[in-house]
Length: 127
Image 1 (tube, rainbow, N blue to C red):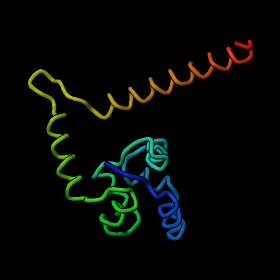
Image 2: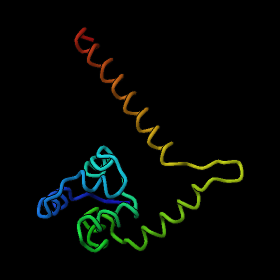
Image 3: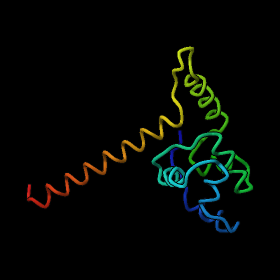
């Protein structure tokens, strides 16, 4: 799990290569929103995404891991492999997919929006 994400380093590296965050998204198969979530520490970066970012930035994956706040890429790879094996569908088709997680993110975003709307309305009414 990442401790911090050094978005300044990534933005500087992207700029020096004449690239933008959209390049990271495109090359890793992510949406720009997913990349922004990683940059804002709202979503952890996966090991495969570290390697994809490293490829896009033309640096060693260990360097990307360092600036993502991943202390030990080898240990993180083992941890993720273990989690991935847990999330593999069982004989009944169970397991957690990326689509399921993204669906949950979307639902949470909608709930947060509704809560903000309600709280704003309450503030306007002086309650």
